[in-house]
Amino acid sequence: MKKWFAFMEWGIFALRAYHYLMIAIQLAAQASFSVSFAVEAIWLAAAFIVPILFWLPGKKVQPTAFVITELLLGGSYSLYSIAHPTLAANVDYLLPSLTIGYMLTRRNIWSLAIVFSMPFLAMPLHEVSWSLALRQSTDNLLFAFIGIWVGYIANAYREKNQLMQEVEQQNEQLRQLAEQIARMTRSEERHRLSGELHDALGHSYISLIMGLDVSIALLERDPEQAKQRLHSLRTLAEQQLEHMRDFVHGMAEEREEHWDEQLSTLLQQFREHTGTVTHLHHSGSLYGLSPDIGHTLIRVIQESLTNALKHGKATEITVHLNVHTATKKIDTAIPSAKLLTIRIHNNGNAGGHIAYGFGLTSMQQQLEVLGGQLDIQSHPQIGTTVHVTIPWKGVE
Image 1 (cartoon, rainbow, N blue to C red):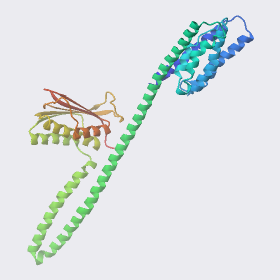
Image 2 (cartoon, rainbow, N blue to C red; image 1 turned 60 degrees about the vertical axis):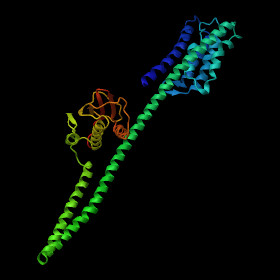
Image 3 (tube, helix red, strand yellow; image 1 turned 120 degrees about the horizontal axis):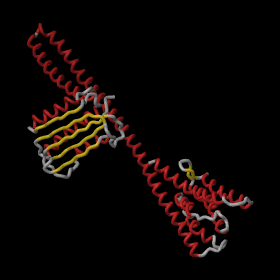
Image 4 (cartoon, rainbow, N blue to C red; image 1 turned 180 degrees about the vertical axis):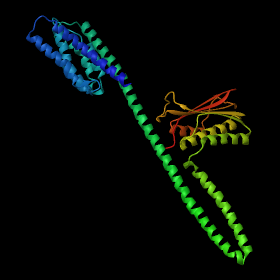
């Protein structure tokens, strides 16, 4: 895109340079040197060089200053050449009009009137017919409008490019913010669970120790009461064991998880509990997959299984999971050499139109945060296929 902008601007610049180069060649072809020749050469050089001080492609852009100097020097030279038809350098003003149109803004829109009226201004200086002046004015205005059109396209592409850069920067900021929020959420959850472990299990273990001490003391004096206390402590221990298991399951997100096993277990349990035939085709290992990607993977498959059974009344579901090297860049702000692709097909009753409820909307939002893509295709008598692509991200 930037190369195209540069090529277009340098093309306009080259056309203007060609205009003044042709005049210079005609001047150089004159037979003798004179004071008028020197003045005309200096005038011509100033008409070409001075406006460049205010516009050079890729360096500086001051449109109004460029237009003013171009009209004052180049325009006056054009009028001078019309007033002296014997000069070898008698030329039109088409290419400069094109350049002025390209540099046109709201602040210098008045220049169109001058470009149009220049041939009429030359009528008192030389015998120029109204028809000829009108034709030259129309040609100047036509080239100016061509320049305006080219400038409009250039500005549109430039604004689009700037907007795309701003969107990419905002997406990158949003991705970093989402990752930061996810880390903070996991950290807060870890602190919450550790606090509950300290408050609940710590107090229970102290109670157990103290109860055991009392039971030991009662063994000789009152064995029956000691036995009752031991049964009560055993019940408390069982309860706290279940409590501890719940805490451990809640903290499992902070440890290394075996996603391959979880995926196989998920499909097996779904098959056993619902009677739906499930198939898993797995290519590549999920070892080292980050928790956020792993949990999203499980949630995507869970949601797809639930929808296939609930809405499609599917009797057979096939899950294809593939970890492979990226062959092309997907539309994502997260660079990755590996991709995780999931294809879930079911033979359920496809309704054609896919309505995004809370589950699918939440799934799509989670994938967008991770730089992934979601595509759902549904065809009658074929079924529904869910395609998901996620850039691979390892454990940090």
